[in-house]
Image (tube, rainbow over all chains, first blue to last red):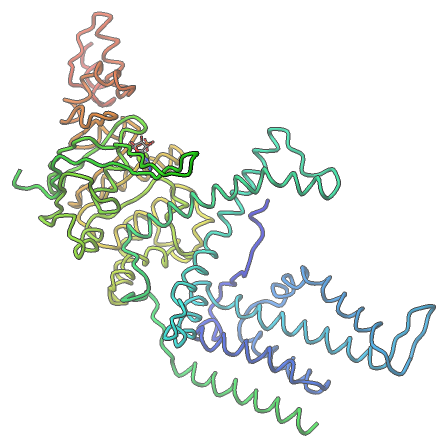
Length: 266
Length: 288
Ligand SMILES: Nc1ncnc2c1ncn2[C@@H]1O[C@H](COP(=O)(O)OP(=O)(O)OP(=O)(O)O)[C@@H](O)[C@H]1O
Ligand SMILES: [Mg+2]
């Protein structure tokens, strides 16, 4: 039941996008977020959508797979749309009882929702086409300059790797504890909010105990496998930029320039 | 023994715990888990370690590869003494460990990345890691699963990944600490088959187990007793025929020994040295 939840899911396929270096994909995703906030015209949005559409087509990830992830965020999208629609003052184009819709509000609502959809799609494409371990590896390499300032970049990346690995394990553990407590007559489904929150204590306490036990076991296992921090480690999949990645960098920055020009001239 | 790969001399290990009293002062509580163990382990041998809960089996295993350091006594692995701080990584590379819980020893969220974890830590070049990962996965029969997420595999499969991870470090000695305790009978059989195969390939195996049926497959069995060190040490036949001593420390002898004892009590003439069920079957069949 609970293990069906997938987080930051990866879609296994063999495409140009999958084969790109994780670093370029992380940078492109970050730039894309910035670009979405630079864009302020419908033309710009269509341009940004077209660009994303092209990347999706190249990635071979089916659209249905991408939109499945969107469903969970539908409420946020609707909320954003409605708030913007009714809350922004300006030239009124529609009025019913206390609800008024202004021209500016309609624009803002459309822009904001559009932006969010593109933002979610763009960033989920990163996790859909990059294995978790490459993602954390890429991040480690990108953050490397910070390690000169004593920022523990390797440790941060290792923590993320382990977190990703143990999310399913901890979910399973939670499931087990819930079932064990239910078998002892615990009731998690009725009562008011405060009572329900109180009822969670018999889940949370054993879960913490398990988490500490797992952490202890894992630390022991990692030490037994000669883990001694990031220094002197080699990788099974070493990161190396190829021609493909250089082309991608050129395209990504050309796109950034065109978005800025669009903003200035239109 | 001239062919010995691990030499343990009078090993004593004490766990020290700080305890805070009611008045705020702290006292050190000392718990002696190993009390004077001496063992010589031959290169390429298969040693089974058996004992009750709390008899110190895991503590012994952790001492052998430097996860814990002896309180007193001396351990040498391939001639290197374990107190040697600089050589500790060499020793851990040489003495790989597989633990009981298959879930809590896998680090990465993709099978092959997990197997690569050990050699990556050792700074092995990428191409060599690739080779070792593929070889190890093929040996445990999990090569086809190399791109899967460990949490989608069965317990037995996860344990095989853990064994592959240990193998990828290219060790001479592998210590298994109750590797089958959390598995179903099928997973248990798979793991035992791999352990036997590794032994045949010349690895030195130390298997800690609660299952006597697994221990009889070893060349040598050591029985630990809580608080007093080694109780019995010898070939499975020598050790398991002493069923009375075994029962004294709450261990159940293997099925064949148990059955042999009862048949003997009924007046049948069963040799003392039958420890495996197949031998017993064979013997009983030729009686007629
Ligand atoms: N971290 C620790 N701190 C304090 N005491 C410990 C610790 N780990 C083990 N002990 C104690 O040391 C003794 C030996 O423990 P050990 O885990 O080695 O036994 P074992 O033979 O492996 O048992 P099991 O069959 O349950 O795995 C036990 O009495 C145990 O309570
Ligand atoms: Mg133990």
